[in-house]
Length: 568
Image (cartoon, rainbow, N blue to C red; front, side, top):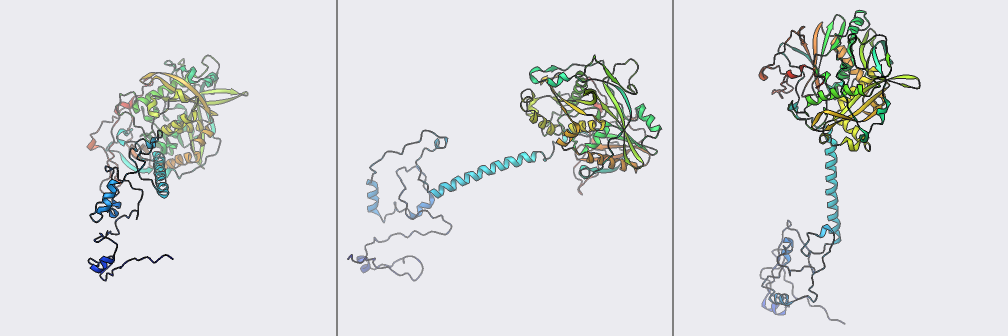
């Protein structure tokens, strides 16, 4: 039988934990096999404890940094172990070859030093932390992309008011766009056609086969006249007003601006005239409504210099020029024409006019309130011996670096991505075109994709593709609610009908999503009424939303935009 193990004398420390300062006697020391003065390694709870006994450490590489938590249990440099220190200095491994280095894999490229083997739980923990970091990075990127659509729009410094607010103007009300989103109103369908004027040419179906590989050059039609006549200058509307056919009168361009107001970013203005019990919605000469916005809802800022070919003003003129020429090029010009009850009411005899038909349509807004609007269609096509009306519009690409998509490469393979990008950058323009097609009762709306021959050449363009959509289906695709559109119009009409007789102007704020109603003098915007530019400190400021004054909303004048250059 094996004899018992002699553990020696264990001293008792009445003053605390651990061995006493002087606990061993001479007799005890003679019977004790342990060395004297073995240091006790104290530690606090804040220190990280390592392994109690680590047999895997290798201190052959003195330059390698040591783990601070291991220093508590490191007695290699202590004088109490002189014999062990000598043994360590003379000890050598039999196999001194360094471990082989992996030749492949980027994760081993920078690990030049020999490392301690990690326990399995540490490896699992490291992989879990890396997975969490990668997931957090993807989440940040996802939320950043999602927030781009709702983030604050571009710097308001590049936006200017469409009209100079004069000191004598009296602001009556301001309506935030958030109030428009809750409105809904249904009108009886279909509306009543009162009169059709003008003549239409047939659509050339060969343009449906146009592709980037067989693009067609955009022609110029300088001899054909295009008319942008406001409501009160229309002789047909004047005649209908005298016959008491309706109470409210407008055009499709004005109504579409009101219907799609919540999507607008740029400033616009509409003149409202209350005459007796009738209401007329007009536009000023050279108004923003005569132009087409480009990249209005995009987050990429456009150059601010007005003479830059990619500025908002230059692109608006260029887009109007492209749309006019596109609407005439895709027609069979030498073929038959479809004529209607009356000729073009704005053309002189013998004058060559563009292919356009005006449909004067009436909607019932209330028991004793009707609205008459002049709507436009640009072409006609015969399908199964039935004639269908078309509206013709063109999207224009000016520089691929702004949109991020090159139409010449993506239109054939990723047309949906191109349209989605345009819906993001030109949401207001596409919504207005769709609402105009719905007002005009068009059976099809043709969208052309027109691009510059060269990004720095804004005079020469090519047609890359033409795509047709049904207006109601396209409205559902872009989330355009017809009930909400008519709800906005009905609310504004009801508000204006409560005003006294006179002239008013609706102005979209250039920096905030809201519209303001001003009472203006009767001679405002007439030929003898001159709007003189005001110094910035004298311009009328809208009421502040904060007690301390809020942000300043000084508006600047656009005197240079009074004239419409149809040929840019």
